[in-house]
Amino acid sequence: MSSTPLLVILVGSIFTNNIIFASFLGMCSFMAVSDKIDTAIGLGSAVTFVMVATTAINYLVYHYILVPLGLEFISYIIFIAVIAAFVQFVEMFVERFSPGLYIALGIFLPLITVNCAILGVSLFMVLRNYNFLQSTVFGLGGGLGWTLAIMLMAGLREKMGYSNVPRPLKGAAVIMLVTGVLAMAFMGFSGIINL
Amino acid sequence: MIEGILAVGITTSIFILLSAILLVAEKYFTDYGICSITINEGSSVLEQKGGITLLSSLIDNKVFIPSACGGKGSCGFCKVIVQSGGGSILPTETSFMTRGEIRSGVRLACQVKVKQNLEISIPEGLLSVKEFSATVASSIELTHDIKELTFDLIEPVDIEQKPGQYIQICAPAPDGVVFRAYSISSPSYEKNKVQIVVRLIPGGIASTYIHGLKVGDSVMFTGPYGEFILSEDESTDIVCVGGGAGMAPINNIIHSLYAKWPNRKCYLFFGCRTLNDVFYLEQFKELAKIHPNLKIVYGLSDPIGDDEEWDGDSGFIHLSVDKHLEFGKKSQAFLCGPPPMIEAVTDILSEKGLKAEDIFYDKF
Image 1 (cartoon, chains in turn green, purple):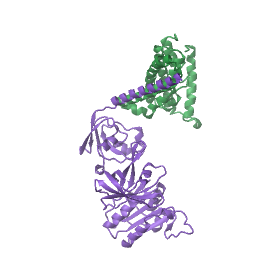
Image 2: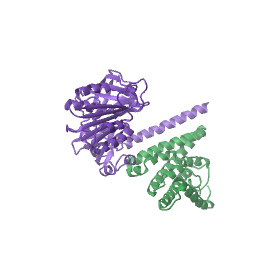
Image 3: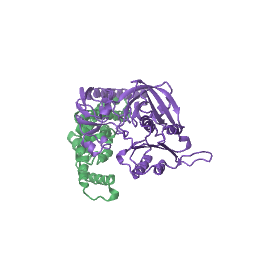
Image 4: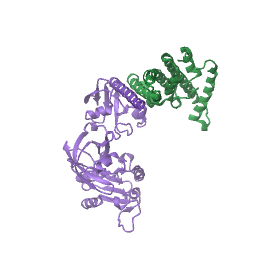
């Protein structure tokens, strides 16, 4: 088992090993839903929630069902199934209790299912030998890091609406460039902690 | 070997467990209790279990809102005004709405979920839409891909329809049923039957089903829908322009018209591709012998073969309209056919002095 302290995992997964800027996972919804801060916060919280919950569930499934039976090799498919089911659950929950958020996220909510950041966190958890608490905190940190990244991007894109972007770079191209610059900025954190 | 079976077994049981959890959650989350739907300021009140769409609740209660896509939000037919309880408009609906419609609260019934008490208003005409069961009385091949079907009504036994109105036929589909709209071809004075003209569309769910129907088969449809109103003023000429399979509403208009006004002036323009696509020409010629004010022009858009005889027009049908129609006569026009034909004919008609509100069309 890894002995990394919880606080280190939390800070590390938000800043030094940010799931978007260090691992470049979860890019599709990051690019699609980052045009308004409000929506970005909504999707970010949904991702964080799903990430914490699925990492915890996947930890239990992996260590209490798959490892004892020696079936680690089916972990991918099981992780994906757990994530998909959980997203369905969240979708129904949000539709019932927060129609506003449901309308704002619209078709993007199902995007969480295929958000590789979420599968990525579950797989990192296995790779890095975290225990249950560490995994959950790692999931939380991963989600918060993703939310931070998409909020930064949404803020920049709201401002970029007023700037004169050269025509060939309009749309996805400039977002890629900005993501790259942000990733370089996040590299500044890398000396502090390393997961 | 054992590991393989174990892997499959574990995967399956985890999948089943997850599905079970989702089913329970769905049952709990979509339970909104009984909601009431008030239609047209109390002219009728429905009690409905919440959680399903407004469209399905209305259909369950025998209020038949037109819908061609079966509730997928892709046809934009099921517009109703929701006065309260519908929440705000969804992004899936806005593309079907004008700004004025959004302001006055028009929604697509298939996208509104019944979660609380609703107040809606729908056109009065839709409240008289009924569900009909019928049997196939005849199925006649008019051309190689167009069939004329006649249905004998069983329950209810008669239908009150106006020329230009349509029915929605229920056709079995891979996932449930679909409803497809077809104009009524039989004249409105024939109350006990409904006739339609259907072109077989390769891969089309409903047209394949309808073309496969045999005499005696039972069918289900709802109707009548549509708001075309034939001008009651006898001095107004009627101009019907059809193309391809777009004959049904025109057949209905012409026969209903001459049953009421034997001397009324009426033009029938019908565009076909080749001689093989021509149908109903002889029966209209017979009708024109009785009613000399009926002018019939059929046009063929493809060149006529060497061994074929044709005394009608050549070229696209809007050219025939241009050639035969007088300028400035008070007229009402009904067009039925493919979109390019409708556009071309609409242009010609406005050049001939018809106002936009006197031009009705059925695009498909």
